[in-house]
Image (cartoon, rainbow, N blue to C red; front, side):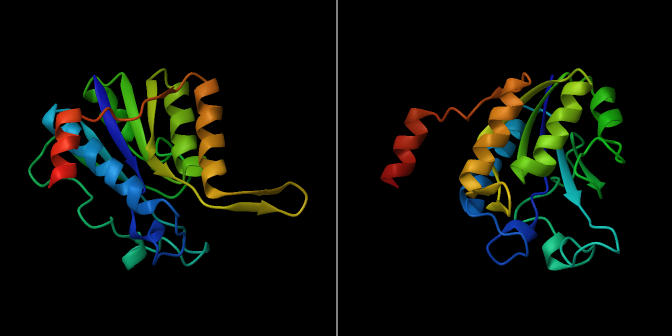
Length: 191
């Protein structure tokens, strides 16, 4: 059985957040579509939230707007196949009970979405691979930021995202963009 994992679908990555992601609106739309699909198919959905440790930056501080789930995100009330997990490191499997929850449900594959592609998404995917889970990533449901280094140069957010996905694909992760129903897409375009 496949579970959907949403990494850090939090306000901090929006345009008003302290860790803004250029493709945030498009990525959150793709994540929303993946959540709707998982709910229709009665698959487990794991919502992961990051909270910084007290001595870290002012981003992702518990109780702040930035640490809250983006509007419409979070476990659906009354749905037993959805759960929230907290982390204070890059990987969702480290320091949370997500691994035990997935194992209890008989999950052997995960579809990972969220932010940052090169950070928490990548680390969580690597942890899942090391646990023997099949890993898929929807490239449209992830986002990164621009990166620069004095000696190494710079990459745009899109280059960072693609590079992280390429690295994960070389480790055996499947890159699986959502297939849209052509009839539904035409209906949406006409509306």
